[in-house]
Amino acid sequence: MNSNRTSKTSKIKVKKAEKPPYVTDRSKLRRFHSKNIIFERVMWDSSWKGYKQMYDKKALEIVANGKPGYSRIDFALAYASWIVHDAFEGGFSWKKIKLCKTSSASIGIDWTRTKHEVDDPHKMSTLIKRAAKLFGASLIGVCKLNRDWLYADVDVPEKFENVVVMAVEMDADGIATSPAAPAAAATGVGYSKMAFMLAGMGEFIRNLGYEAIQCGNDAALSIPLAIDAGLGELGRNGLLITPQYGPRVRLCKIFTDIPLEPDKPIEFGVKEFCKKCKLCAEHCEKEGGDAISMEDEPSFEIACRSNNPGALKWYVDVERCYLYWCENGIDCSTCIKACPYNIASARKADVTPKEFWNLV
Ligand code: SF4
Ligand code: SF4
Image 1: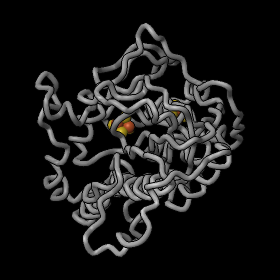
Image 2: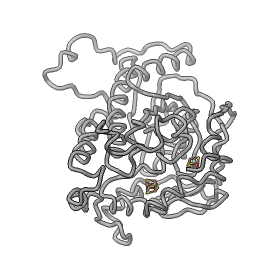
Image 3: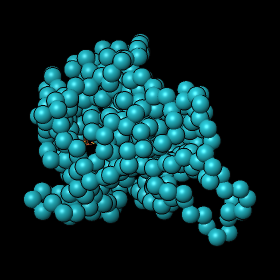
Image 4: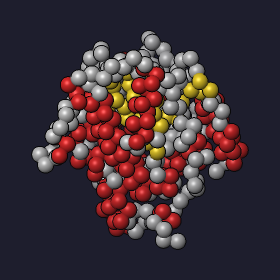
């Protein structure tokens, strides 16, 4: 890895900005329709090569080949990592979560029936952030809901003015094995943690007498909301780059009517750095994904129909990305692993599957 490009991140200077550090063209901006999410298109878009191609189709063949990081143990871990996300519907609830019959929490006071008076939104934001930290969030920000980022097919009532955006750090050693399966396990654990954080925070807000809509990747684009909430900037790899962990985070959000003070967006020079860096694009190409733009300058040119138009950025060809996952037998995080902003916060840039499992 080019040391000139990696060493630059050791001196990240973050400054607050009056407006989010992205450029949009309102004549091109469209609310993104959830049917264009790449995983949705796998199910309906017969015009695309990835139609009905599940990315685990080659998994058994890959396990049989004996490639390090793709053993039955690695896959068992990766599949297990999603269990809370996949099995706990309450994590992504828009209403009070139904408790199981045996729960002792079903006795006692129903706190949701009266409103806690909020006379100081700044203080309330501080309390919300402390609670989110307790529930496992690594980074928390608050913004006003910019409705441009809601999916076109999602209707959120006007009273949900505020968004609490939470980022959870993913396991650095796991991600550093990408594209091997322990990286996918780190991703899955991130999603499962999201379900826990969202459920806890949604209930906390409801217990104060307000409403909460808990969202993972659904309902709205998480990255622009996270930028609005001051968690980071957009990178060439199409991901949120945070000063603390680079792109090595998963994002989720809660829409709420509780009065909160929004955070200011931040700037720390990501766009200028990305113009020269290109490490994510080079590594993606080397793996066989070739999904990230090598152009020096960002543009308004989308790469495929799973991009949302109208923002000046390097559009990632997520069709190619998905097809690479199909070849890999499991999802990939190489554009996270390769990013100097990740490496600045990780123990090691590259971790072998054996090292990950403490077998060396
Ligand atoms: S996840 Fe992998 S294939 Fe997809 S853009 Fe990132 S590096 Fe490329
Ligand atoms: S997003 Fe890509 S180009 Fe930007 S700093 Fe990270 S690796 Fe480099």
